[in-house]
Length: 287
Length: 239
Image (cartoon, rainbow over all chains, first blue to last red):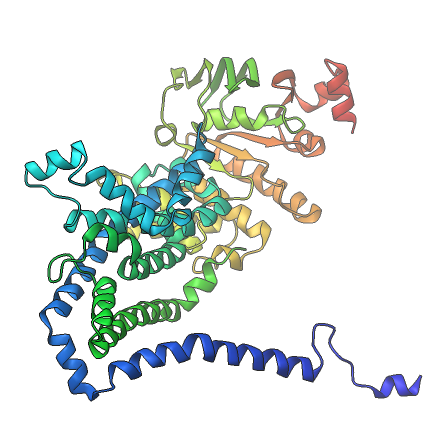
């Protein structure tokens, strides 16, 4: 009995020290090797000719046009898909109707279709060889190899992000709080803005950030639809590829570093919001 | 305000939740809709609130046809089964919600809203909890806040869906008394749904026993005990 009492009690959920260090070590190595190292390489390559080289690369008109194009596309595509995502999630979770399962599958379609295929679909639909595309070009409204095509491709690719983040949260919350607001005399819009939106805001934020990251980073579909015309339809990802293929590695990696920084900035923004509203976040957690 | 239910029926797709039922609820009464799950009692309550619409039949509030009135126009104070308090708002804001939702010219001033909310907090005997969030409250406190929130809109009637369902036995008994007192003080026509026959018999002036979408019997608790109208009523109220 006495030797049992002498051994220190080990919590059942704790691992032996060796297993613990191995697991932690593996995680650290993995993260370093597959996340930090590639990111650092991008920045290191960009700065290989010093800050001057990187700044020169950013002064290239093609690079600036690509940055402008990507930011414009994201600024338009993200709000549209946020609105569509909320509407779709609302319809799916708050109403019962026929074809609901089909709609949910449809929302996931852009995830399962290869971006290149999505781009080709748009080219077939709106390209010069189709009736619709021919008419649009004749009326001076080209879609393929022009801004609208890039926007459509980006909208298609990034459509699921917001809806997918919100749907599970809305489903879990059910309809009771909205119904309560209605019985208290609130209109549909008031209910949406004062009850629904506050309840989904964190999921919405995640969705918007993911959507934004993808909208800026999308390559495949945009590459097919845009035709990659320098200074006109090239976006940051397609411009990076063109620089790289021309052995302009400093320009390619500088632009890549800017794209990576935009992504890091969105992540930082998210963390900042979470940190500032930590108390509210804790308070709104489910009882 | 008295409530008349005339030949009310509700179908969900091919399923009949409510066969045509008729019921007359006198003004100021405290009524229990008693029955097992699937008996149609919650459907009937939600139709009264305007959260569901009947397939056929009419609802009259104080003699006026209310069948087509929207949920907002009904002005029915509704207490939900899990209370459905707004998680991201304080207790004060929860109770003030209905007042703030009013059209500008009917909306009380900020000071008046404060006075009314505090009066309601005193009515439910929780004057100190205005700044707390719902997840910082006990089950019984949440139920009373939900009641205060429903009363804040100066409702024409009070509707409660299993108001004691989420509480443990001891709190349940206390709050029964609380509901009775609030009913007596406000004089509101009150309808609550329950599957607990003891609760219905103890609290209600009039008990409506329901089963499979039909009303089996309507009567004072003593009448139902003494003269059950069917085998179902006898079996269910004996339990």
